[in-house]
Length: 322
Image (tube, rainbow, N blue to C red; front, side, top):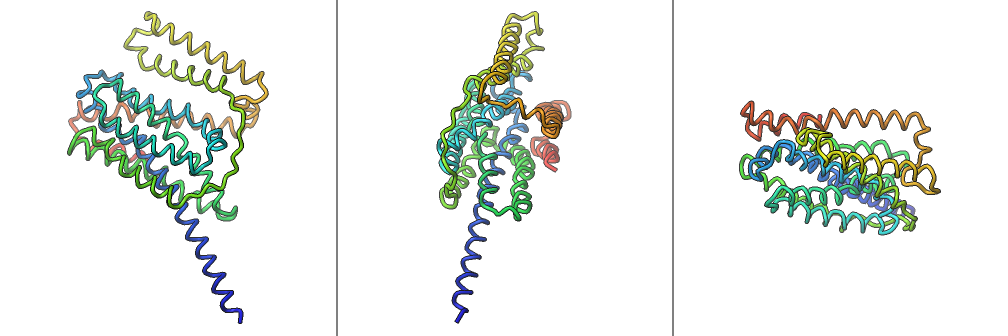
């Protein structure tokens, strides 16, 4: 008499497991897509430099401004989730990411390419944190470790696939196909989100600290431009570098003064009282410094001085993912 109920319970359990599996697969796919695009263009930098008549320090902006845009836009993710919900934010972000990637491939000047790489970074910034939040809310606490381990594979696989695919495409076709290749995978991720992701988050409109956000954005942007153009402009012998440095210092002062006096700061100073948090930030800073510096220098070095083809350079950079 109890057999139908048991079968129904088993089917329901299998249905829940399948639903969790497809959600985890979708979120991992989105993360792989984003992690892949961070490194996919690096192999093609020498080709871009020649095609767009750029100098060595100028072509690195294709990478650095994308990273800066991502760093600046990532803190907006929580506020955007509260305003639009996770599912809708993912749809908007993936759609904008696809358009920006297509526009990068169609760019006919360095300025245009950098502009759309910035947009690519802005739209790509919410993808990983929102997907991680979806995975955490989908699985019970005792399954967090396994789910997050599988989800973390996206962060590992992406930097491996990116340089290899970028090297092959740039060698076989041109650097533009490095960006064109992203579009179909982005559409696949968008269809997966539309099919499997349901918005279960509660929308809460929280007042956002725009003053702190804009001040930090200006400080980071001016600092990055100063570091990129400093050597070529002869550092502080150039009025441009002096102005950018003053803007960076002034914006940083406004940011620090604001977050220490406002009720709801963009970045809570209390976080830095946690020793583990401070150590983690310092380690991530050192890791980023050692990890991202070579990816803009190695492609040009290996191609121009060593004569390596793009496909081989892709395999060399792919080792970073391991």
